[in-house]
Structures are given as C-alpha cells and as structure tokens.
Length: 267
Length: 309
Image (cartoon, rainbow over all chains, first blue to last red):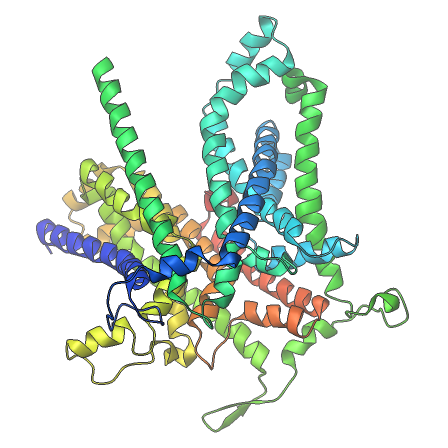
C-alpha cells in the first residue's frame, strides 16, 4: 500500500467517522420537528413546533431543571475548593505518601457511579440522613472533585515556586502569597474545572439515580421515562441543548481566532 | 508538608488538609468501607439491627448462584440469571472496549500524523457537539435510530437492502443494541487518550522505520502501537469502566431478553428493598473494575497517573 492510497483511505474513514458521530444526533434533532407521536424522522408527517410548545408547558421539566441547576451549582461550590486544596496538598508531597494520596484521590473516577451512589446512600443512612438530592450532591462531589484535582495538578507543574519565595521575601503574608501569586496562576485550570464540574453534575445519571430519594433531576427524570414514555418533547429539549452547544462552540472559536489575530498583530 | 506550612502558614495549610480529609474520609473511604461491611449483613428493619439476626455471612453474595437452572440449546447449566447477566455484562463491556479501540486507532493516527494543523482545528470543531452531548442524549439518539420500523430499517428498506424491518436490539443474545449504544456513547473517551499518546511520537521515528524497509503494518506494530500504550491503557480503562457501570444505555437499548448487571443491582436495592444485597453486588462490580484496572496497568506497564490522564 503506498502512502498516498493509505492517506486517501484514512481521509475517507475520518469523514465516515464524523458522519457516524453526527448522523444519530441529526436524526434526534430532526424528530423534534416531526408531527408524529413517536419520536422519529421517518415517516415524515409534516413540520411542527408543537413539541417545543409541549416542552415549554411541562411543569416537571421546569421543576427538575431548577433541581438540576441547584445541585450543579452546589457541586461546583464544593468540588472546586476541595479539588484545588487536594491538588496543592498532593503536589507538596513526595514518594510513597504522594502516590498513596494520589491513588485515594483518583479512585472515585475509577469507580462505577452505581457503587458511589450505593455507598453514599448506605453510609449516610447510618447517621439517619434520608435519601435525597443532598446525598446526590455529596456522591457527585466525590468524583467531580477528583477531576478538578487532576486539572489543577496539571497546571501546578508549570508553576515556578520561586515566585512564592520572592513574594514571601518581599514581605507578603501567607494569604497574600496564595491570593496574589499561586491562585492567579491556577485560575485557568480552576475555571475549566468549574465548567467541567457543572456539566458533569448536570449529566450525572448513575449516582443521582441511587441517591435521589423521591426527588428528581432533569437527566434522571428523562432517562427513566425515555423508553416507556418516549415523547418528541425530549427531542425538542435535546435540540435546544445541541443548539446551545453549537452556538457556544462557534462563539469560542471566534473569540479564539480574534485573540490569535490580536496576538499576531502585537508581534 | 513542612514546605506547605512555610509557604502558606498554619491556617491555610490546615484548611487544605481539612478539605482533603473531608473529601477522602467522608465521601470516599468511609462510605466504601461501610458498603463493604454492610454487604456481609442481612438487611433488617431498624429494630432488628444489632440483634441476634444481625450476623455476618456470605449470603448476600451467594444469591448470585441461587434460582433455577439455566437451559440453553437443550443443555442444562447450573447457571442463574444473575450470574449469567454478570458474565455477559463483563463480556460485552470488554467487547465495547475492543470495538472502540479498533475504530479509534486509525482515526487517532490520522489526527496525529496525517491531517494538517489547520485541518485538525476544523476536525476538532466538528467533534465539539458529539463531545459535549450528554450520555443520555447519545443513548436516546440510538433508541430512535434503532427503533423497530425506525429510520435505519426504513432507510435500508427504501434502498432495497432489506425486505422487512429488523429488530436491531435483539441480536447477540439481546445485547446488540446495548453494544451499539455503549460504543457510541463512550468512543470519544478512547479517541482522545490515543490521539494524545500518538502526538508525542516523533514523526522521524516513523520515517526511520520506513527508510529501514519496514512494511506499513510493521511500523504500526513495532513503533506506533508500543508508543501508544499509555493511551491504549487509559482509553480502555475509561471505556470499560463506563460501559460496565452504565445504566442509561442498557435501560434504553436492552431487548426484552437482556439486562445489565447495574439494573440487577438497582432492582435488588429498590424493588426487593434489599440494600445490603445491593451493596454485595455493587462490591462485585467494583471488584471487576479493580481487576481490570490493575490488569491493564500490569499488561501495559503503566502507572496510575497515566491512566487517570
């Protein structure tokens, strides 16, 4: 096989892969506009907005969206400080204690959500804490903090500790050193970690399903009823979410290109 | 630790230690330990807890061997439905991992070594939507596509490829839909670690192999694959773990004759209201994951830090 033919084959494969990734999502989005009670694009029974209307008037969707938002924001508020503190702590250790602490910290990432959910539920029931979204928050935080920790730890590798020495020598307090020297360096990682934490929480199904008690989040509600009560209003919601993602991606790309152009101008 | 004290002083160091300790003790270690301990005890009403009936035993685990014999093609196996589901869950999670790896390898190579940087930027932009769409919507998309008399069947019928609509989720002992859904849901978790591992390979090494007369498959087998090991290990662990622990995908894409071990756990917890029984099965699931992770680390000779990347 010559290099040229292999490259052509790889191009064909790559395009096919993109089609494979996008086509099911396109079908799902298309079904949101089909005037058919079962979510599908075939047979096509005419264009309609009625599923968006139905979604808008679904009280559960609004209520569970609020729950989801509340849970996600609390998880961010917990996981970001915990993950950052964990990263700073593990980064200051060396040798065996470091690998041991590191292993303990990333173990929730390597644990199935069902296991985290069940262990959280059983553990807190010993203290008479009933199931509910507060337990979902604790369960989600246990693995999302690990993601934040990994991102902050990666960023810490490029930190020049000499800067802190300089700050301390020049009379900065401990708090000032943290606030003015270390944290500014970590902000990109903390910001990215917060964003990831938010989305991980919103889309979490496994842990929330086991710990939620009688409450619901959007993902668990839709995931549990999708098969039996499949309604195109779910597709309408999916279409909105995909639309937001596309707008966000394009916005980010435009911002990135402008920034690159500005930097090029400065050179 | 002393270093930390010197830099940030007692209150701030204390805060960092407190936050980390709260996380690891109350959200990770103690709950795991408690689940493990509970899994050996019967699930009793509150009055009986600590009473004479509350004894440690393996009963919660042994239920996996209980129930009727299992018949298959006229043979009778001493196999129960829970054990059968457990084994198939592991098998199909492995299959999902292998399929994802085979599908991603050429693409990761393409992204790392073939496409131009400008083309790659566009390519990555096309991956943004699939990457950010949640697991729920990925599974739901295939639920629609694979529906009986759904888009896939109708398209193939219109093209004249098949005559009758097909039950896409009924193949492979009822796990074909689950396999398709799991692969689609988690494939990008294989792609990016592989791609990252391959970009760190110096292209000169590939050219040197070619100049020295290696065939294309020899270059891959002897140069590129060995270099990609950390990526293969990391991607495989992530995909396997997500697949074996998935609830959403099997819930949406199961056939009437199949179920997933996580669903068995859920039913035991909340339908039979046996939390400690659920804990025992959850611990089995955790054991499988531990075996898989340590197995991969040994086989590919990589550390935990490579896998968590």
